[in-house]
Image (cartoon, helix red, strand yellow):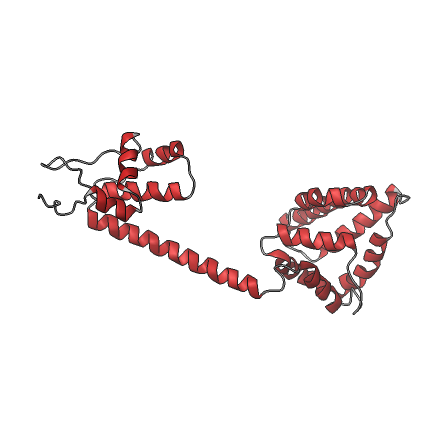
Length: 261
């Protein structure tokens, strides 16, 4: 029996390293996805570092569900060069270390979310925050449209409702803003089919003034929020949202213009 050359692996061994079957390795060769390595004097394929890298990467891309034609493009665009087996395995070990670090971070984030009431209870979290600021009374609750808005904001903000409130803390720190919130919320609740364009425009302008006065970072896409809320709002509320979007953009443009002078 001829032993495997130093620094070279048999098809069975390389398949084991790559997490494949020998049959799969041979199939990838047959379709030209991975070139066949040189054969030894006995006619057996012997795999070195370059081939190990190619097969491991193919196996990973397949595990992610990438179609074979796309994998072929990725492989063709990658030149592993003539790499020793030891260097190839060390490089792959480094990649695994990086993946482990990412998994650990993901695990820790999942546990943090599991412990956080803000993840699946944005309405409760927002209600509590507004009660703490005196905008809502101890027994007051959000309106139906406000509850929906809380859920949407939680979904579209990169850091959820907690991120929204972190930015809004700048607004809550302004006594004038807190004083204005109550009357504005009452006016919002009074919107009805008989509300005039002038009333809606005035309310939108006042809300936009308050929202931009605290220099909130604005990491929520107002257009996206509007589109997600539209089918759950009545026609008057939709008119208000369109007007608010226009007023917010105008106010933000004016603020940006002043800062650049």
